[in-house]
Structure formats: C-alpha cells, structure tokens
Length: 203
Image 1 (cartoon, rainbow, N blue to C red):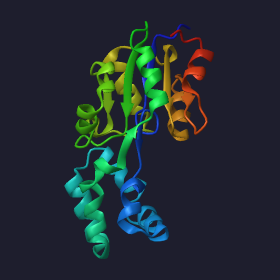
Image 2: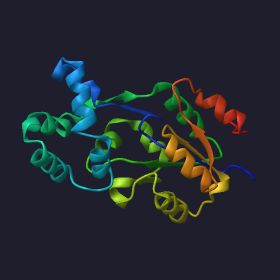
Image 3: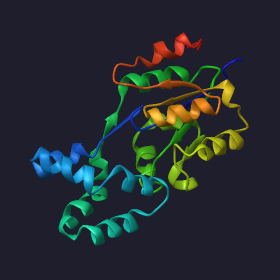
C-alpha cells in the first residue's frame, strides 16, 4: 500500500510542553513540585480540559477538592505559556522538509481548545498543515479513544493503511496500529527523518 498521508501529534513530537518549566521556579522544591503534579494537577485532570472541559471549570473543580493548593492550581493555566517552552527543532525541521513533498500532512492532537490558538499564532510551522488539524478539545474526544482517529479519517476522506501516524504516547501508538495506521513512536533517541525514510517516505 502506498503511503499518502503523514499525521503528526504535537505535544512531545513538535512542541516541548511540560508544567515543570514553570513550577520548578515556583516551588524551588522538587519533591513538593512532583507531589503536586502527580496528585493534584494530574494528567487525568489536565486531560479533561483537553477533552473540552473549560479551563475555568477544571480549575474551580480542583480548588474545591484541594483548597489548600488554590494558588498553585490557579497558576497552572495562568502560566501555561511558560510550560510551552519551545518547538522541538529536529522534528520541526522534518515537518518543514515534508511541506513541499507529495504527502498530505495532518495534525491529531490532545489539546485544549482554549490554549491551542496560542500555539497556532506563535509558531508559524502550524500553517504547514493548512488547517487540517483535529484538536481533541474542539471535538470533545481525546486519544486514545479510537473515535478521534475516525473523525480524522472521515473528515479528510483518507485511509489508515495509507497513513503514517507519529506520536510520543505508547498507548496512542497501540490504538493507531490496531486501526491500521503505520506508526512511528517518538522516544528520546528517535531520529524522525530516518524512521520516515526507512518507511519509504521521500523527502
């Protein structure tokens, strides 16, 4: 089967986002910071904002549960742009190389509908996707729910078996493989361009 499409996850693939970039200076106490990130503003909690819950609602719900952490919980989304440290240059370079290629490029991201516009406005390479981006917060669906991949396939009339899916999350990769996508799992030492060339992608 010929590869026609390349689909990028964003966080951990082309964007370097981590709440520690803000909270390490806020806490100046690594143990306390890790406790807060693991037990108070958990990945599951943040994931609900990525699924479409408003930042205001997510914040107030968590303050109700943990009033003693109110200042830090409010700081989470107030300082979200500090957590979005930068792009991931080596992978953005691959994306730019693919721009003039024969492949159609798509984005499939778990991202709050309220914070994603900031990334769009501040990082020009998102324009390479020409608006062909499925954002979890807008769809009210989140990876690894298979339905969000189906939204992408149906909206753009593409086939999984003709598409490479790139993500840094092992669970997302597993689900995508089960749906028939060709997958590249981004790890710390992954050379994305080499992985794509090995799949026969022509730059």
